[in-house]
Image (cartoon, rainbow, N blue to C red; front, top):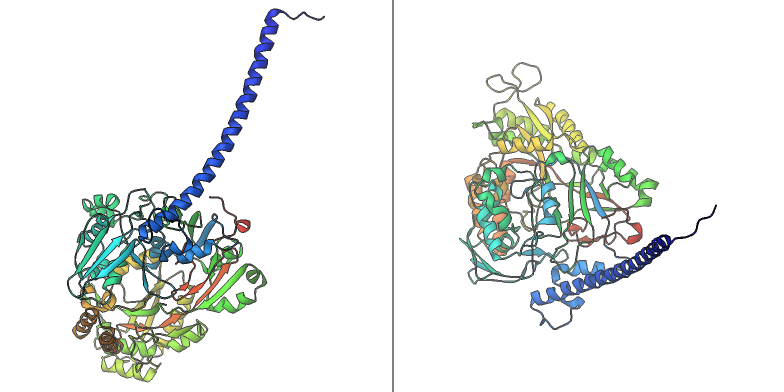
Length: 614
């Protein structure tokens, strides 16, 4: 049975039709607004890029604000990165994913002491000047220019006016002066940095964007010392002057002006496992970071790291010598990787440090003859051949054999069981009970623990080899593996017999940090307690000698003392044997080594090969 439409029905249908029409119109309007918004966003992005380029030109003082920005006007520190952006397949986006072979104790600046934390900080913190990786000359970063007084005691920096920290606050001369004052505050746990900065009398601001470093006396690395200091934001760190212990015990307090930042600059802790940085969207630099994120996974096992690399879950793998040749023949590895074998001029060295003071008392290693004997017993050439398969060279001293600091007359100690036994007998050690092992005059056997990083398989193999060599002379060495955070804690407390580690190196190495008596203090880097007044005098004189032709002979005299005293048994300088995923583009070798990581704005992943979302 059909029903007639009433007036009420017609009204309802009319209202419904009107509602549908309004909805369609609204959707059309929203769509138009969305398109407009997209256009505006694209336009703003292009304008922001242009503004960054123009801002760079203005800040550098090269041209007036009305001049157009061109490639030639990009600040020198960003030239290499700018060249990368001109490559046909350049793209922003994706993640850089690497691995650390050990847990990190802390990544807080000044408090941290290891190369892993320094690596993280290099993405977040910046300095006034930086090294040109092609020429090794200094070039401006936050500073656009500088001048040195005739007597070399005052270095004044003119700073860019467009630099901001990642939270948006401007970076000014006040932050530079604050950083110096913060480091020099005794309550702040920064003895290593203070050891160097004590050469500076004061840091003065002259207006908002000019800062001057006044030195107490001439110093050969004055420009490096002043210009290379990582700048901390005053507004972020000054509260810790009131509660320094909170800073000293912190695990992840880091905020800077660099291309990347911690998502939460106050609350990273080791129990989070990985270390993750995100792109600093406010980055002031002429070139913006290519990667959206920088991630370091903690993978302590060598085999696990290799498997992770095979699976494409990390971007590079530092191969052990024992596996390198086989990996170069591995079809799956070669199909996905590019490999690099190199030893940059600034490569560091490994060593065994002999602790001379433990618990306030001298140890057997206080005797120079004992340290020399241990060096004669340490067959470095065999270690290099059997463990590192000749992908290393012997280290004679803290100075590279290619360095001007090195005395070419000094050669590595040869392995000599006879010389070692003779020296140990002179020092009072001989087999007194006929068991084949040495004892001192009180009948106490010559034995000690050698601390090493438990996650490093090559170091473990080396230690076991040395144990067998030492026992031939009647010396019992007990391998003592430890986790990285525990090792660092024991170093600070000087609670070890002997330890094998490595130091990074530089273009010119200053011996003050590791071998000067002034640094044989709590938390100082002369953690073996080695002291020699003659060496102290030479180090002090070399550091204040600006003339290179006069300074190098002083370093060579200092090297001769270290060579004679053997506070360390110097082991080797190792080659880097690196495989990098082919998705990483624009890898280049520089005088500082491969530009992977050390120059974070230069490498990138083409859009077609990207696999991580922001």
